[in-house]
Amino acid sequence: MGESGVPTIDLQEFPGQKLRRACEEWGCFRLVNHNISLTLMADMKRVVRSLLDLPFDVKKRNLDVIAGSGYMAPSQANPLYEALGLYDMGSSQAVETFCSQLDASPYQREVIEMYAKAIHGVAKDVARKLAESLGLSGDYFESWACQFRINKYNFTPETIGSSGVQIHTDSGFLTILQDDENVGGLEVMNPSGVYVAVDPVPGTLLINLGDIATVWSNGRFRNVQHRVQCKEATIRISIASFLLAGGEEVEAPPELVDSEHPRLYVPFTYEDYRKLRLATKLQAGEALELKRIES
Ligand SMILES: O=C(O)CCC(=O)C(=O)O
Ligand SMILES: [Fe+2]
Image 1 (cartoon, rainbow, N blue to C red):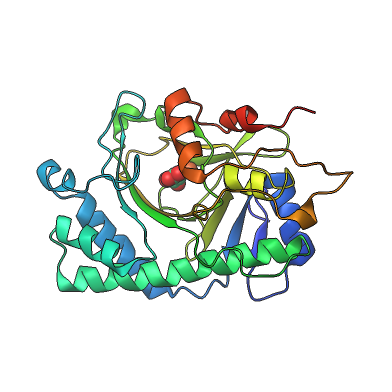
Image 2 (spheres, rainbow, N blue to C red):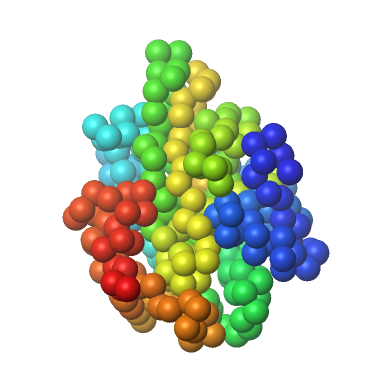
């Protein structure tokens, strides 16, 4: 366990019970022994930083493919935050388009392609282990879409103490976060409902479960609320990869539904859910209440 109490999961062990508890109680955990090389993580961080340093006119060429998937400029809600994004990172065509929009060099393309492939693999591997921890086996996640977002926080001495990204849950199934290995600021809600700082641990990845994980597990897994606060006067960079959902309606597998665990949510498509979150501005998982089956 780290400073904040966030559980640590070793992907090379057979983490079944520990993994399940982490997902039920926290909805997040630190992943160690994940098979992404430290070199690739460091190379990717440098590439991402230089893309986010591009002029505004170039960054805004990174258009939405689905709502909110492209460039996000600093906004009234999150004035210190901007992001570039890519949908779907499992598609080499989409990776190619993203790189072309940003005039990425052949070297930068190569790093992005390698990282996208490797992280997509880890995302599916972790998802499979989550299912196994609930006693399920099978290829649920093979064709699920994966969104990629690189985040920059323009922190300065004047902004210390203010918000970097407001409280939210991630909307998809799970997120793999390569958080800034030097600059802290991420906070997650612990099982007692208190925000705790997640200090950087170089070489590891952080997994956050989102709203779709709660639906898919029929309420067993927690969609962790989190936020980013400015604590240091330094640019902060993070790389988020979101395993979202499949193209069909999202619903808990029948094995997770019985008389003691009646189905909690009406089946819905991820696309509809994403629109619902945007339209209602319910960003912290509350939109799920609108999908609950009345009991
Ligand atoms: O930058 C971070 O550490 C967190 C980013 C985040 O929560 C997100 O991209 O959804
Ligand atoms: Fe998030």
